[in-house]
Image (cartoon, rainbow, N blue to C red; front, side, top):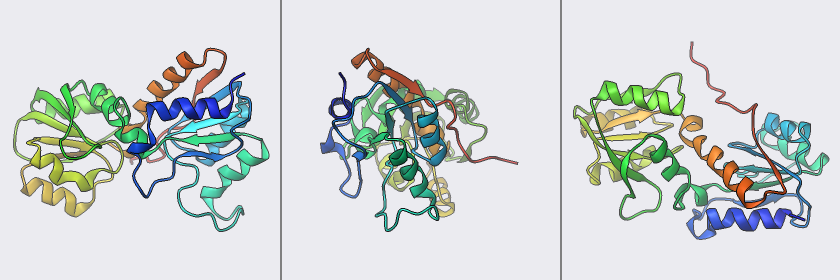
Length: 253
C-alpha cells in the first residue's frame, strides 16, 4: 500500500529540500504520513475550491506547488480565506503536500518546464543562482509575444519593449521580477515572469530588457501536468487526477 510518506519521499526526489529557500514552507502541511493513499489531486494552489474538489473526487491527498500554510496560522476560523481550505481538508481526512521553491529551483522543476514549454533552445541555469533559466529563441518581439501567449494559454500579456531583437530569453515562473538584473547580467534580451510592478517595467525598458508578465498562474501551471504524470508513473496503483476546476482567477475586461 502506498502511504503519504511514500508520496512525500518521491516528491522530494523531484524537488530536493536543499533547493528550498530559507523562508519557505514545504512538505507535509496537513494529515498523517501513515495515511494510505488511493487517489491524489494535483493542483497549482491549495485554495478552498481545490480542497473541495479533492473531497468531491474522493482524494486522500492533495499535492500542490504553493504551500497550504505559508504564514503562521493564528486561529482556525472561517474569517480567513487561507484557512478555509485547511479546515475542509482536516474535516475530510485529506493530507496535503506542497513543493514550492524547492520545485522552482530543482533540475527538471518549474523553471526548466517553463523554458521547455516556451521551446527555448540550449536551456541552462543562469550562473550564480539556482532559480532562473535561460535559453535561445530567435524572433521579433511581436512573434515572441504571440508565441508566449499560445504556449502558456494566456488571455493577455503585459510587457515593455527593450528595443532589441529577441535572441536570448530568461524565464522565472511566478514572482521572479526582482531578479531583473540577473537576466540582464546574463545577456538576455527578454525576461518572461509575472507579478511585475510599475517601476520594474520602467527600469527594464530603460536598461534595454524586454520584460513580459505572463501571469503567475500561467507561468507555473505547466509544471503541474508534468508532476501529475511523474506521480502516475511512480505509483501505478494510485489514481492521480489533475485539477479540472483550478484556473487563473484574474479576468480582463
